[in-house]
Length: 151
Image (cartoon, rainbow, N blue to C red; front, side, top):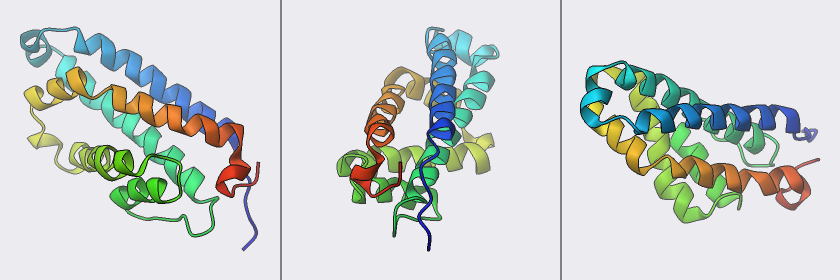
């Protein structure tokens, strides 16, 4: 198989998109739980969180598809694989990012079961997980060869 170079522009576009979604989620996190639950905050948070999570996994699959043996087809496997190939700290990959993958699936397939309280809790306590992910991707863009990727 011929190696495919990393498309930095694609990754940067997705990273910028995640940051835009995080700005919107941070605004929603400033609401009280009551206002968040009774207004449009809850529905907007689902939308922006879903988009941010899609960005994470689009970046992940793009990078992994350029690493020999890096392919994974299931979201939680994608998360674990990033730890295996050294892009993410394995503990973060196997716990936090794996949970993010599960939440992505929950938003897509079990959206009717997502409560405003759980979503509000996520906004209050877990938005920094996206920043940790983005910080880990920057070295891949700066030195893809370190990870076995053509630059």
